[in-house]
Amino acid sequence: MVTHLNLDLNARVLQVFLFFNKVKGSSDSPGKITFSFVFDLKVGKGVDDMAGVEQRQNKSGGGGKKKEVKKETGLGLSFTKDENFGEWYSEVVVNGEMIEYYDISGCYILRPWAISIWEIMQTFFDAEIKKMKVKNCYFPLFVSPGVLQKEKDHIEGFAPEVAWVTKSGESELEVPIAIRPTSETVMYPYYSKWIRGHRDLPLKLNQWCNVVRWEFSNPTPFIRSREFLWQEGHTAFATKEEADTEVLQILELYRCIYEEFLAIPVTKGRKSELETFAGGLYTTSVEAFIPNTGRGIQGATSHCLGQNFAKMFEINFENEKGEKGMVWQNSWAYSTRTIGVMVMVHGDDKGLVLPPKVAALQLIVIPVPYKDADTQGIFDACVATVATLSDAGIRAEADLRDNYSPGWKYSNWEMKGVPLRIEIGPRDLANNQVRAVRRDNGAKTDISRVFLVEQVKGMLDKIQQNLFDVAKQKRDACVEVLKTWEEFVTALGQKKLILAPWCDEEDVEKDVKARTKGDMGAAKSLCTPFEQPELPEGTKCFASGKPAKKWTYWGRSY
Image 1: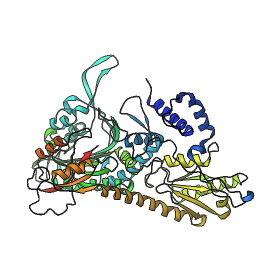
Image 2 (image 1 turned 60 degrees about the vertical axis):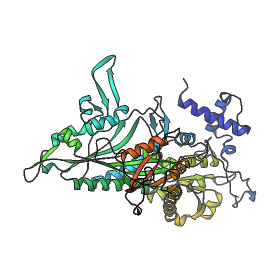
Image 3 (image 1 turned 90 degrees about the horizontal axis):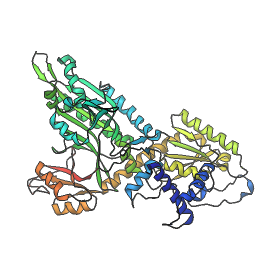
Image 4 (image 1 turned 90 degrees about the vertical axis):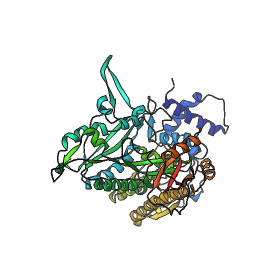
């Protein structure tokens, strides 16, 4: 059996072989060049031919001979985002060092480059929920069958995805144990134990953990995996008003994560009854959209569970008047799916494009020593530049490896999506300046080292804003507002995000799914946006012809 790692290596070898031979579809075996390819990478031979280097003229000496300018090309990607999105995405997350494939399908190794993004978002969110008096805890990974099945609607929604432990060594367990797909049924028996009176409320707990959902179709790194990291908050209140307020507070934090950190535009809205969390009263979400595939993607959810779980698990309390009542509950979560959405929205044919706010490394400094240049002086300038920027709170490093050319380093850090690159060569050293190159648009700017910190901070802010603006423009260009079924079918075929008037009936939504089912997947409601356009009197539902009650986003989704 060939592992994912071998497949990936062979793909890269074949790509390089075809590049040098300039012949696509060569029948020569990639195995013949595997070892020379690996050796070349380690010693830095021939890499400039692949990556290309734009070399600036050395005007500070050495006879003033003009260096050859080579065209910059991509390093390591054999698929483009527009031509084959799925293969492009798989390559980017591996070559960009976000994940590595594991020997169990649907499970992935999250490498430090990805975990650092998760940690930055975690730091922000954890601090914000603590301001709301939410406390962190941890509950076990395992669930007993009796507890899991106590809330029937809930477990029916997750049943196909639940993984079970059935053996210990060679012995069959007397009672199989489930691995949590979510933790409502794990936590709520203890809420019943801990909540007795109104002084025990509100109870606000959150846990950072992993969950397992045994997905069987189309596993995709970050987007659809059998194990993933998330936070899940579970809160209990004396009144529905308190629960309703928190639902929207948490949803706003999720909007901040997507729009202010990941630079991804999202729509806040409410899910249909059909799409509501199993066993919950209502579900709100932030919804993103991937223009290249024409699919919506649920970014994060904040659920009001009502009193259904309180009834099942007998979570009761006594109020100030001595009257008995059931608590009102919420649950809310976002996961490492956020990282996959970021890659899909911002990545390009050179690799990852990371927003500065979440990039582990915001800036990379690369020395560009030409022949007969003051190499040590250039290296010293690179180290000093990193120290200056680091002292100012900018996440910066220098790539001083001497076994790789500057051109190879350019492409390598572009692949990893570092927002800003600084180059320092002989001319820069002589002029007390650096050259800054933006990852998002390739713009190059010479910056005096006197104003280095303020200029770099300004550029990082502009990159963050530009990524959001470009993503929003692309998303908005895909929105199609329509009112008839014929228009709906046409727009769906054009990969549009559809906003249409709807009668808000479950049977109609099921009918839309049935009528649009095909190889690309069926269309469904994504969310009803909180910000509603005007709905003129007499407007008909696009699908049923009945009186419309609201505007709702529709489309295919992940």
